[in-house]
Each structure stands twice: as C-alpha cells, then as structure tokens.
Image (tube, rainbow, N blue to C red; front, side):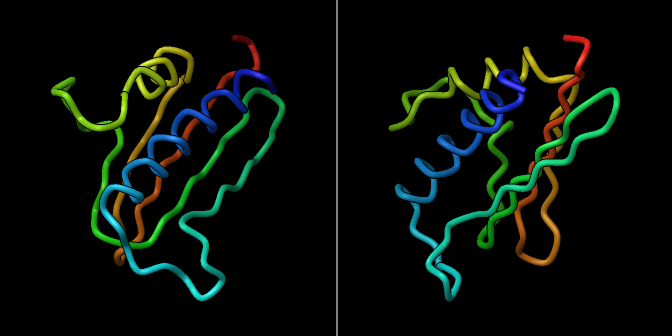
Length: 101
C-alpha cells in the first residue's frame, strides 16, 4: 500500500505543479483533480482525473521545466504500468501497482 501511495503522490504533485503553472478552469467545488483507488487480490489501481487541456505527465524531456520529473520517473520504475488517456477534455492517468512488488 505504501508503494501505491508513493506513486499516486508523485503523479499528483506533478499534475498540481503543471496546473499551477498553466491555470485551468476549475470545477465548481474548486478541485483540480480527483483520485480513486481500487484494490483487488493481486494489484492496486489508482486513477487520477483532471479536466482541462491535454496534459500527459508521462510525455516529457528533462529540459529545465519549472517543476521536476524525478517523481514521475520513480513512479514509472515502481508501477507495473502507467497509462495516460484524454477523453472529452478529461486527463486520466491510471497507475497499476502489483502487490507482489
């Protein structure tokens, strides 16, 4: 569970930094994104959703951005898989962490 929380935190911090640097229209409850966690026998899945222009936290180059990508790289090494999709102005990041890790 700790590893899963670490992955969620790293991606959430990256998305927070991006949306702070590139403001988006917020939801009525003033949230930037929401996080859901699903648990089964062999893995845990975290889904982070945010409204706005497409932003793929996995598509980057280390090129002097105002926020670091070290946390995203760490999450990529820990997670079994991380998938980004953008559907109807919704950025969706799915992180799957094996319980056998």
